[in-house]
Amino acid sequence: MENGVARRGWNFKSYGALADAAQLTIRGTLNTIMCNLDGGDTRPTIPLGHGDPSVFPCFRTTPIAEDAVISALRSAEYNCYAPTAGILPARRAIAEYLSRDLPYELSSDDVFLTVGCTQSIEIAVSVLARPGANILLPNPGYRFYEARAACSGVEVRHFNLIPERNWEVDLDGIKSLADENTVAMVLVNPGNPCGNVFTYQHLAKVAETAKKLGILIISDEVYGHLTFGCNPFVPMGVFGSIAPVLTLGSISKRWLVPGWRCGWLVTNDPNGILKETKIVDDIKNCLNVSSDPATFVQGAIPQILKTTREDFFNKTIDILRQTAAICFDKIKEIDGITCPCKPVGSMFVMVKMDVSRLADISDDVDFCCKLAKEESVVILPGSAVGCKNWLRITFAIGPSSLEDGLERLKSFCQRHVKK
Ligand SMILES: *Cc1c(COP(=O)(O)O)cnc(C)c1O
Image 1 (cartoon, rainbow, N blue to C red):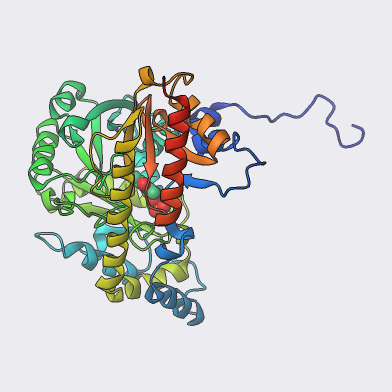
Image 2 (cartoon, helix red, strand yellow):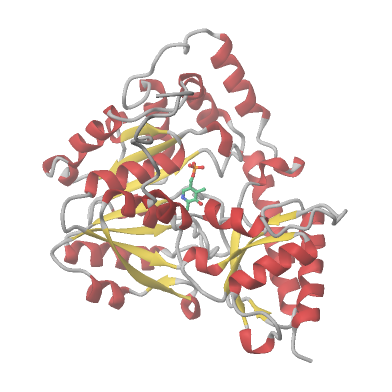
């Protein structure tokens, strides 16, 4: 061996499998799109791709949350490791917070703290994995589920959300996809990427369907309460006595602090089915071989959940209602793209490309690459959420940047639409 080089070469190298899983994620796709940005453009880049409004001053979190973290940190009570499932006061506070919208009381034992909703997804998919298992995922959908299923070797089957019915679940599709190896279905409500909010009646039908099929419902409610249309937010846990529900959430979206990395995985299961099937034990096992949110952020959770004032939530909702309307109205003016449903929740809207009207654009990825290059506007191609030749636009950015971005999108389409 000379100069530190092993004689027969190094024994380790990339196996390539992770690249496939990463390509599925929104982050992976956006990185590809952003490679096209033109460094010579002096205009600011408008980020309509991923949903992180926290960088805009109008979406700053409440001082109550900031103070809660500061006092937790300064108390020196949270410099320790936390218990596997999270510190008890935080679990209790989350149980109380979620029970407000339920017909029964959750206990702190139902709540597990996670590193954002992202880790809740990892845990939920991992505990359900077994040879031959399959999981039903929505299309369009939040592809992190697909990526995690790939990591755990769980087969994915897609059911459709139907744009003509405000993105409701195709329940007949679910029945025809499921078999005895189907372990769960995933719902994201309020919806990412569709900006829809399911009605009480529809959720009840979903629960009945899950019961018939003998499957668990994983309900991703990371956008819980971020609704600004006619449909109020109804948590899936309301139907937990029909079929067991794992509710996933975090403070990332409602409190506008995705960087704080604190979320939860909650069993909504008044009949104790998840205990009986030992899924609860596996959640604990899984957390035991994993990491947990910073203890001082856990320490801040009770104060954040109990003392945040309605006027903070209302302000966020008011801005989102306004920016959703700006987005929907502006897209109506643009030739070459259409928006089938006005967004009524979350931070996103799905927009359909009319490829036959566009002159020199082959598909959604091509559209987004050229848009980034020519207009310094970043949009997510629909294929990253399972819908080729659609686009996902976030409206959770400052209103003036949004108007600027949409104006540039309009000029782009004007240049590329067939004359
Ligand atoms: C943002 C998001 C997550 C991840 O939430 P974090 O708390 O930031 O980890 C999970 N699911 C959906 C649908 C999301 O949009």
